[in-house]
Length: 191
Image (cartoon, rainbow, N blue to C red; front, side, top):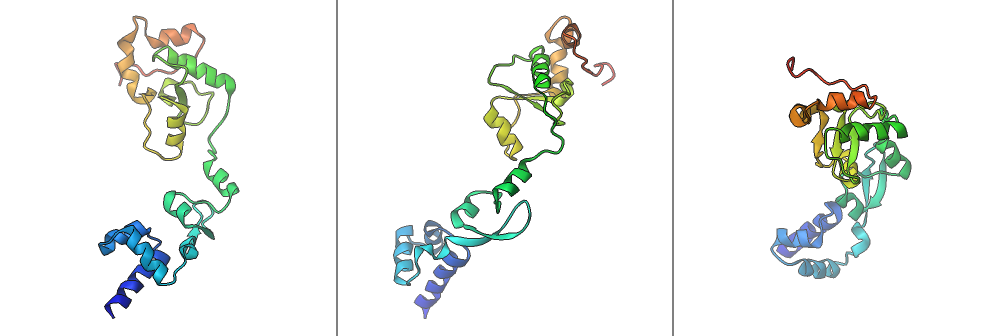
């Protein structure tokens, strides 16, 4: 009776709850290899729990997915179209000239390296306002931020702007105006 209860518990862990053999072993106080042998002895094929029902993060429809895909990723999508739709930013306004302009504005107040990526908080690449600009150390950090990771910028215009005022004798307002950029900078006496 006790062996049957243990077998049913292992079956439930593996087939229903989709735990790995190592995780089941930890729960049962044995190795993952022992659980593998037990599952084979019970007649459960390893592929029995490879396809599971999941819900698409984007469209909320149920679909069959590989077990390892569902366990490994926080967001699971039923199709490439749903993945692409979830990545779209409705506020994004691309502008090649805006990117160059923003890099020039940031370079005036921060030691910008070629690998650094300038991020526009509002998604509008034409908005070169220092309060709207952040700098990430690499494109990988920038993408990780957009994917919901804890990647943090190495410079933020909205919080680091006060630290920059004494950096140059003329200040970054002078740099921006000399180079033809209309950049709003809050008055330090009013903030």
